[in-house]
Length: 551
Image 1: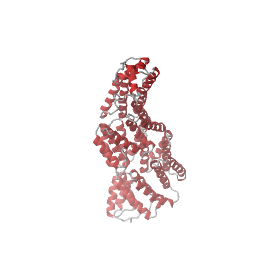
Image 2: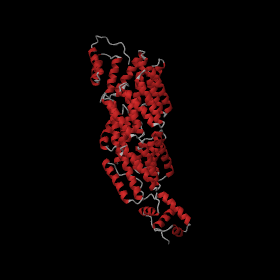
Image 3: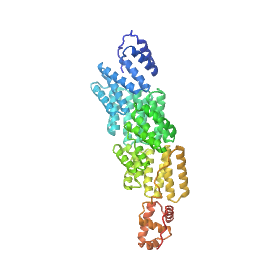
Image 4: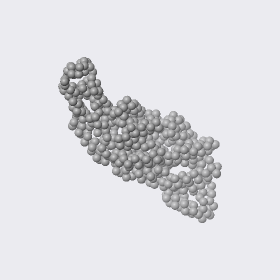
């Protein structure tokens, strides 16, 4: 806010307290500034400048609601004074704050107020703040990367005229987000990394700098890029530590740290903190609070605590988030697969390309044993999304999905490299639960291929990870019941192979031509993922198929 003539008579009895509060605020002693300013306000009304100090102190101390209420009062006072540029800046900050609280309608109302004020004024840095918020809305609310990129170019040009460092950061932020959404992740993150520099240098107001950090960390999470998420979370923690341990973004740092701790298997530690943090942040940063409850729900669901998971997902939904795929997977764990599929399909309709990726693997796993054609559609979409964004986590999901589909089709040999690639990706991202699920899958595949020792080793690895995590037993398709999609005739042919019959003998036993017997055998090899009669016989023996002899 620009300096204004003092509104208080210099002989006011509250002047010593006001001076003390202003000095405490300048030193970053928010608690002292707050107490002293509130005490001064009890003696006489505070000026707008002092109200702003009070509002800012509350914000730094984590009282976001109280801060915003005072900021709205400051805004009205600035408009009454016809200080429209300062009023526009206040309105823009309120728009940002209402947005992160999850109230898009109120956020848009404040943005419109700022726009109306700035329309009557010559260009200023505040016009750049407006462009930044408009670009953010375009990309997050409408999925419009082109408009965000256009706003970025305007900000770059504006910064050359205004020489405001935060405009450079805003421009790089929007260009980076647009590039990532267009599938140019490497280039996009170069811009996003550069956007951080003015923030780290203290050249961007804290509310806006914190939003930049959180937006990028959330993007990393959406992309399942946990390695990059760790780096940005560490950077946010260092930035927060240099400013204040009590303001809102300190709590947000911990949320992201707990998401990473949970991914790495520290469920007990994460569970102990997430509910408290969610309650603390729900009125300050709604979508981060929803992340808390979603993560808590996932931990409880994986532990087998269905009622606790349902309660956590309900809290996330109360904050305006659909809590998927966790809520649907909870239904599947209870044997309600059709309900789970209905919920996942409904959630797909409300998400963009990246948001859909989180739903596709669960859809493939649920559909593969019953509707291979639909599972193929979703699997192909996930593979396309993984190739488009190119992050290790998405690529691992795609391999996992393809392996699950091949496994459901009884194509064991083909599923093996897919699961092994998924395991490699999960290890690189330190995703312990997902890795255990892959070892369980590999155990079933090895067993189906007749590799009993390897199957036992995979099963033991999965069990060890499950025990370390405190996870409930997995519910995976039973390969003993999934006979590779073989037809009744193919099972007869396989029974003949098990009895040691040649193709000519199979033809005689089943009263078919030798060419037909050969074609059936080729189809069987493809479906069960083997390439020899010996392997096919081992598979048949493992699945309890009876020998077929001439009657």
